[in-house]
Image (cartoon, rainbow, N blue to C red):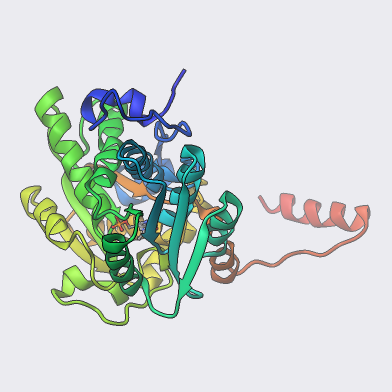
Length: 352
Ligand code: F0G
C-alpha cells in the first residue's frame, strides 16, 4: 500500500527515527499524456497533475515534510502566509499532526475553494489588507518572537518535500523530460524541482531537463529584475511581487539552460480553457501559467518540435470555481419537460 512521501522517499528526505511519519497519502500523482495538445503543438506533452494531491495542490508534498519536522522539533503550532493553497495544506497537515495552524491571507484575494478548506480543516485564519508579500514579511517577523514554526517555502523542509515530484516524473517517464514547464510565484517550487532532478541525476543517472518557469505578466518580478509593489493577475495563486526564492529560481534557470518568462492573463486563461476543453484536465488559473508558457515557447522556438515536455499542473480547477464560471462563456439550457430535452439532444446529435 502506498503510504505517502515520508515513507516512500525516506532515504532521499531528512527523515530520522524521531520524525513522525504523518501522511495523507500525498504524492504519487498521475503524469497525464495530453494527446490533443501534443498533436496541436507538435511535441510530446504531459501534465503532472498535482491537483490530485489530498488538499488539491502540490503544497502537500512540502507541507507533510515541514509539519513532520516542526512536530519533531517540539512545535505546537505552525504559521504561514498564503495565496490560498499553502494555507489549505498547512491546515490539513496541522490537524493530522494534532497541532494548530495560523494562516495569514490577503483579504479578498484568495480563491473560494481554498478559503473553504482552511475553514473546514480548522485553521485560525488571519486576513490582512495587504498582499502576499506583506503577509510573508509579517509571518517571518512573528515566527522570530512567538512559539510557532514558520512553514512557508523559506523553510528548507518545504523544498525537500516538493523535490519528490521531480523523482516521480523521472520514474513515470523512465527518463527526465527535455523541458519542465512550471508556474513561478514565490519561486520555491521551481527551485525544489531542480534540486530533485539533480539528485535523481546523481543517484539514478537520468539526464537533466531545461527548466522553463513562467510568472504572470503583472507579477513578473524575476523577469523584470525588480520587485513589484502591487502585483496583479487573475491567477491569484501567483500574485506575488517579491519572490522569496528569487536567487534559487535564477540558479535553476541558468544551470539548466532554461528560461523564466512572463505570460499574460489572456494567455493564462486561454491555456486554462484549452486543457479542460481539449484534453479533459481541469486546473486552476495559476497552474495554467505552465501550459501558457509551453504554447508561447513552442511559437517562439524556445521549445523545439518533437521535444518531451512536462507541464506542472500545480492545483486543481475546483479550487477556484468563480474564475471557472466567469472566464468561460456558457449557455445553460433551462428546460423542464422531457420532450423539450429530446428535441434539444436530437438537434445537437444530428449535427455531430
Ligand atoms: N501554482 C499554484 C496553484 C500555487 O498555489 C503556487 C503558490 C504556485 C503555483 C507557485 O509556486 O510559490 O513555489 O513559485 N502558492 C503559494 C500559496 C504562494 O500561498 O499557496 P511557488
